[in-house]
Amino acid sequence: MPEGHQEQCYVLRMWSDGEQQWRFSLEPLRGGARYNFARLEDLVAALERAKEEACATQLKSQP
Image (cartoon, rainbow, N blue to C red; front, side, top):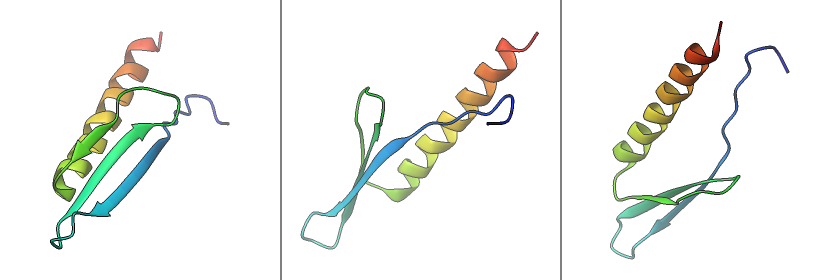
């Protein structure tokens, strides 16, 4: 892998509640809390936050 490469893996689940509403959950593959979302927009926002946190962590660890 290239130097500085970061990777986060998640299990994404999506299901219908029977009333044409979709629900979503994200669970880190390497363990951790599962996050549930009622809206796709909230799921995408959570992924954006995870990306930003990973970038900030990477910047702090550089000399």
